[in-house]
Length: 122
Image (tube, rainbow, N blue to C red; front, side, top):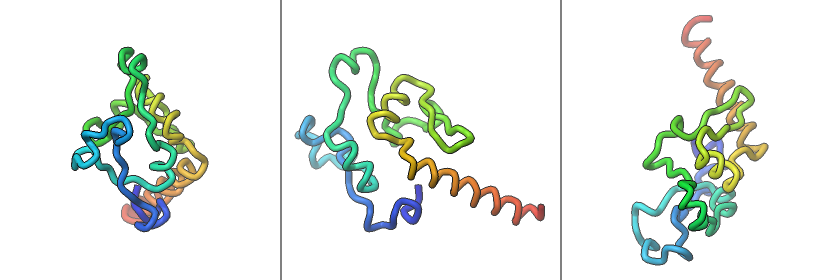
């Protein structure tokens, strides 16, 4: 989402995708640093699937290496639905269907729809 919709650029920070408390060797790894809004970064903190979950193939979806549509779909109401077990896990762990996020997705859809109708002359 654009910074504007997420509270502005001052609301964003670097997240260690693989938590530095669990993967200290990746603390300074450029490919482990992700741009995240403060609430999402705070919710995630050091969460990471247990070895038992990983053995079942469950992981946090990395959208820098995976396509959104491979793991998620957006419902008409703006909520995300996991279409893989890892997609569901990621939505639950990161609370990606918080009311604020769903409402922002609805607003973005409305803006895009209005811009489409304005540009197409409808």
